[in-house]
Image 1 (cartoon, rainbow, N blue to C red):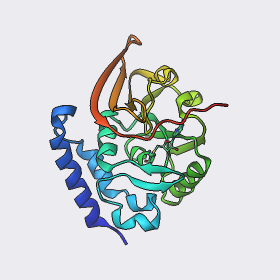
Image 2: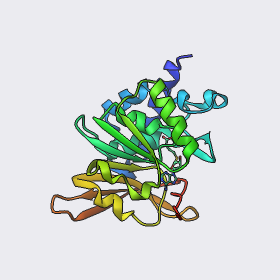
Image 3: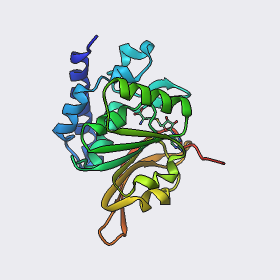
Length: 221
Ligand code: SAH
């Protein structure tokens, strides 16, 4: 099964939703290069087979270990807000299925991704290797710590909400780099935010859209 038409329909819905949310996001459309990449990536390969009939619907899907793959429109928006460029090195927090990492891998030079649930990290590693994405490195660990060894990053994207912006992530951004993440706690309203590190090292924070994400698991080690 190729799901080519289903993917085209998913792209159409993403475009429609971008137009609906324009008042919030200030963005009438998602970058066409990002949409092209999303039209090619087999999202069904990132979800359990039982979910294949819903793989291209514009909703989150269960991926096991109590986790979900984010809604396609939100993935598209977060990718766009990151302003990826071919020479970039980016950090993806919360690998989950590896879908966000796969999209980024087609848009930038190198993706580093951190996942706290070992099973998910190992499954994503196997999956991404099998599908031929060879510029993604995955580590099992607490994403709030970032990945110092590979820093600084041109962009960081986080797929789980925290009540505060993790300071390590800001520290690991290059000047001019962007951090895109849901801010808030699990039981209260969350906002998708973009933190931009200016050339002088100061940061600007912008609220984009109300969202719902799983909470970032705290590491109590
Ligand atoms: N980007 C993923 C979305 C996964 S949902 C995808 O495309 O499929 C969020 C993920 O964040 C979950 O897999 C969850 O296990 C992971 N997560 C939660 N807390 C974390 C932490 N502290 N560090 C790293 N990953 C974390």
